[in-house]
Length: 137
Image 1: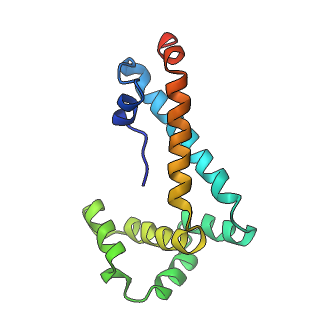
Image 2 (image 1 turned 90 degrees about the vertical axis):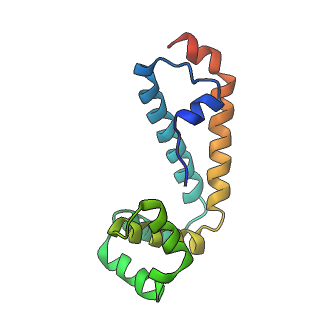
């Protein structure tokens, strides 16, 4: 879905951060991205939807089973097969990712746009403050 990694740092001009600071900066940027996505997403959802999504994230078995049952022959779906190819195997984590994907598709169809906007915001902020970040490194 999304990940702030070394190639992201290179793209914003921070590839030269000292190795002992890269990890902390990457984690900070990833955390900020997740917070922004969560805030934007939650502003489009009802309280009931937010509760259900939290159950999916927490891998609540009843909620997971309900969504998997509603999906029918999900193990043969294109989405599920793609998730298996990324993960390298069929596992409970793949099922969780599958339920998350179909839930988001149904309840928050603008999710990818929210991700793209949030990454763009973080990218711009980092680029605009690159010199200060490097000076404090």
